Image (cartoon, rainbow, N blue to C red; front, side, top):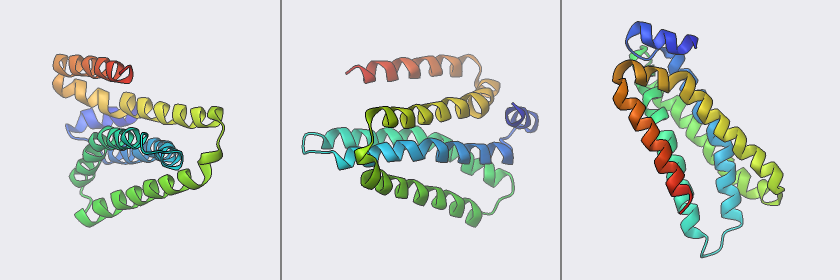
Length: 161
């Protein structure tokens, strides 16, 4: 709540919002990338399309948060070197999560994997509700509300295909 208020009061995302997005991408990305590693470990030729789809989905879902976070860091007077460096470290951590997921999580029970995926989903929802949605509503109003609803509908339809 404090982060969203700070972003609204300055007219631009605050440095706090930027670091909240960095944390959200990392907390959300580790379980996602562990799941990607598990998918790689249990893949067959038929499952390759599913792995590619998962990889694309992870990239697409994290890109907006990463972009806004990097832009907010720059508007908060962080140097380009710092911004690139911290997001590179995040990318390395998430890449390591894929490798660890492939090596370790292959033997996970379905319940344990479900817990990790639920954690990832919760991290996404929390970051969206706390940082991105209030700012989007402040600047876009009805258009952003409709876009959000249509995005959820599209995700629901695609998940049933």
